[in-house]
Image 1 (cartoon, helix red, strand yellow):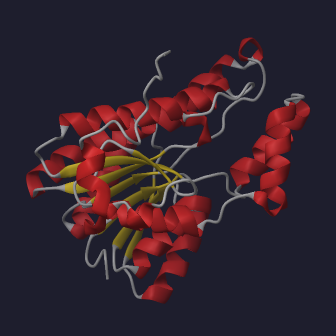
Image 2 (tube, rainbow, N blue to C red; image 1 turned 30 degrees about the vertical axis):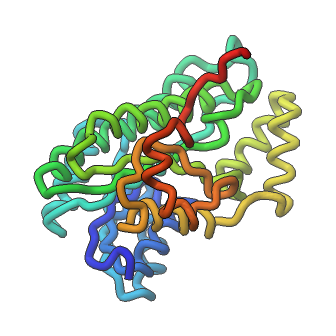
Length: 277
């Protein structure tokens, strides 16, 4: 198994993409720390993981609170002794509508959950990974990272920030055997897309409403895609690949392994500006 006896922290693992990644990791032999604010959802994920005889612990956590994050990491270390993988999946869509009309607190909260949360989790686990000789960090990006969508300023800003933070942290950790990558899951039928569709209708955000309708009517990606990609990025298969944004739907990640040295010598799969000719 690709993740045998590895210890993984997965935020937002009570449902949706986070739950799918947790189950995929369990299938590959990982011990999993299930993290979110809703205990009942985490317990449901833990029950599903039992089918694969994998160990899991439920740790209710607010990823925007430094103390809560520190306690979560300490509990994981207390139970398992190490942290090999961190998946920063917890995220929200934030307010929908023109920027000037967004509720200030809602806008800031989106940045807190989507950017500050991953920052706090990385800050807590990086020293542990460095001391134990390595690790893998996976930050969930999203379509907002490389698409400018009107009426989703908080979401797009936060996801672009996550990818840039991923690139910077990867540079800072060069030579420490800690790889940091961003995972673009694709548009998947999750509760977040249901909320986006409904909120877009109220805000008359036609483009977002149309995308939401398409995703929720079966036109979205499969949960298996980001879960499979997460296993690749968390395992030895991804080698020294770091500081890259990999799409679960647009990139042929199953064949990336042979191209990793070439990718790492280039700016491929990064956020970069295209200059005028």
